[in-house]
Length: 155
Ligand SMILES: [Fe+2]
Ligand SMILES: [Fe+2]
Image 1 (cartoon, protein in one colour):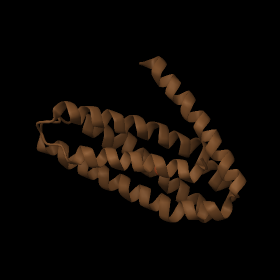
Image 2: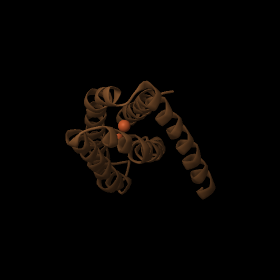
Image 3: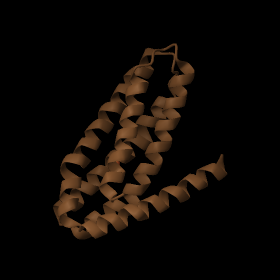
Image 4: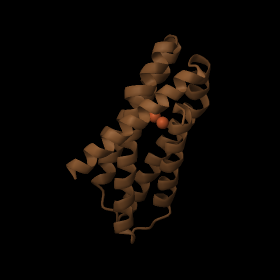
């Protein structure tokens, strides 16, 4: 799978999990907890693939404007990881506040995904050849595997 297809597939997975989470009510405490931890896991791996492999290759091939795109995207990852997700995890799933915070997470991520898919990926297609996109995809598959193994060991 090439790098862009792989990242888009991850986006679909996360969007699907977010929609499922958004449909839950305060009574679905266990489901909410499970979905949040699944989303956190998916994002952790996805952002690692982007930040360690895809964004650096994109910056290397691109101009200053492209670097700015990648830097902004990384800041959005950081906001989700460092602020929004920890905040949700500290909120009881049986409250209305939980749903409000999930809504913010969903909007942030949808906006982020849209920018990647509409701005960064088309630009990456121009900057990186077919061959390099394939190679990056393969490197990301390998990193994903080793991150998952690390997770399994830590659990
Ligand atoms: Fe991203
Ligand atoms: Fe992404």
